[in-house]
Image 1 (cartoon, helix red, strand yellow):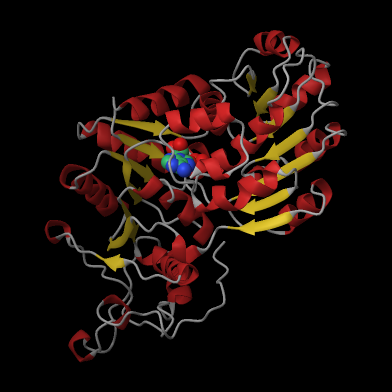
Image 2 (cartoon, helix red, strand yellow):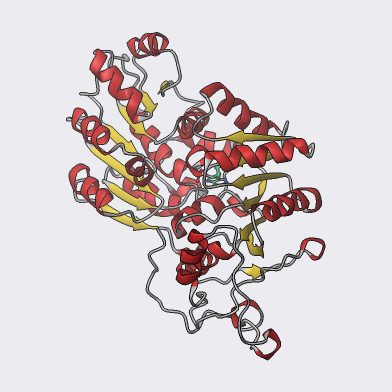
Length: 441
Ligand code: AMP
């Protein structure tokens, strides 16, 4: 029940209007101390309801007697334009019964129009670091009277090279009384550094318990021989799976464009989203997916990071993500708010070890699935250590480098005399695995 929180009645009215009945774990953990004014460091994944966990206490702080609008009182920083827009929508939904005004500052929009919006002084400013810095430099932005600073997806902002911008922006908010920092991962040294610099005696809430992730999402792998085989598998899955909306992730822009081309040629209605696309195309792709004009989006990680799209129930990893955390981000888009989802990773021989280290990281074993009509020759490594890792893969990689087209030599032993690759078939594969998290990046 949201009424258990000490929130203003107009905010509770908005919560009821939005049909939020039960708070999610991150909301339960973060709202009370945030309302009390504490600094928080929250580790929570996308899809956990973390936006409301900071938006509600933030709006609560701004309630009270109406004041003339002469200063920006809250600054919310996010890594991408899409996330900033999404957060603005969330803030507007929760503040619909209040007089609180919000503004958005991101790249790709008209600088002068933004300047005019800033002159009207919104209570809450939401933005991406780069463009905010430009406004600071142009003298069109004053953050000196900000009371509350929120950094969302802080780990991703650092990954994207915003460390210096973040330091500058946070130091501009000299008079702030409260800072909340959200990240999807526990982050590295960069994050520890920024946490030490911007938070005062923070409460650290860790909601990212891997075991609790994706409860509503089935996770499968399908082995593939090569890229062309993966492309056929994607087409088959899009034609034969039952889903409302699907995202297919690739690791590179080039691959995203190539796959998109293949899908369009096969008359699949799809959009592609990556960092090379201009703002108009990116917005169009997301709007179409949200409104259901298209059901399929091909995307790279950065472009699709944190997107919240209703009815997204199928994620296909065309390429395996480079780390366990990235995998969690991708999968976090399905099975949201209790819905069902399906995540399928397509695994070539050079994806196998990465896939098995992600399994160990998540302490889960993905379901092995075979599409009868499209069964390839690669079925996973022949030799598996107890850890699920392929033995001798390094050697193969070197050989593959020498001659990319050369097929691996058949083993000297007859295949019939070999034991079946244990990781593929029966054993649950979890018990003997090391607890230590693998370095998969
Ligand atoms: P987020 O992790 O903030 O991106 O939220 C994921 C989705 O869950 C958004 O569509 C929210 O509107 C929705 N959501 C968040 N909290 C709740 C809740 N307590 N009840 C129902 N839906 C929620």
